[in-house]
Length: 296
Ligand SMILES: Nc1ncnc2c1ncn2[C@@H]1O[C@H](COP(=O)(O)OP(=O)(O)OP(=O)(O)O)[C@@H](O)[C@H]1O
Image (cartoon, rainbow, N blue to C red; front, side, top):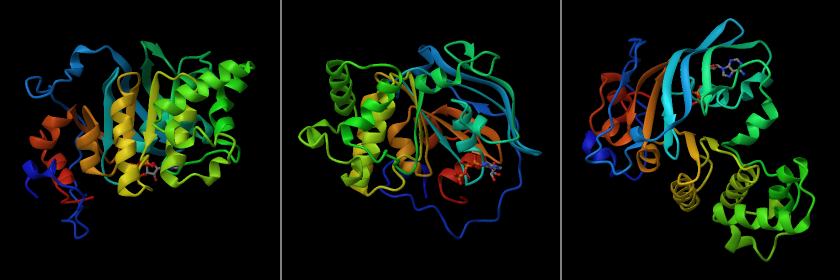
């Protein structure tokens, strides 16, 4: 596939009959400057909300991430791409310490949120996860009403007043572009919603704890094209208020929704830079091979 046509493609025709697995290991990422004349969103001018400095990550003896360093600017969408098993989800989960829940894991290096190392001793991990919310591949609403799903986080945080909860629920459902569809059925079970609606409800639930950063792990991969488009539109809207990091296998989705793309391969960061640049003029042959579907 010609690179120039990639951005215009509708689906992701990742080649099943991939060429032989490249064996090259790149340890120094190519850091590309964004093309500011083509990209209205000059994210290099923004403050860095999240910064990874020389991050190594281990599951027991297995090293899943090697020396990952890059910045995620505020109010930008950063897409993490790369073949299965390259460490995208592991890296994403490092950003709110979700990996702490897995036994015998270890992290070296630093991850800064607003300049503070989230792995430093004394970090309140519950508070951290409120500031860095997460939406998973498979929507996972609680078996409660639509209202209670969104009110859950604020209630746990001690909000008791009904009028305050009502305001939070409406605002978050509005932000998640779900309010119009559910305002008359807030007491219905969340499990009665469609898959796409459930995913937007999970986004509303994540927003209810007032996060600064939203992590999304393939949030649309289980959805039909219409629901996928709704989630992509939503991501675009949300980035004016939140910093978003998204894992996706869908190259067109990465090209459509993200400002910055980071390409991972075998636990290494190969290349990071402006999405427009990366998809039209990648700096590394391996990146080009991946985004054009030569291996996956
Ligand atoms: N809980 C775990 N325990 C041990 N090893 C793990 C665990 N989770 C992931 N790994 C390993 O870490 C490496 C990176 O996995 P990870 O899930 O981060 O990759 P990924 O790029 O997100 O893959 P995919 O696109 O298939 O979701 C893989 O070798 C995987 O087997």
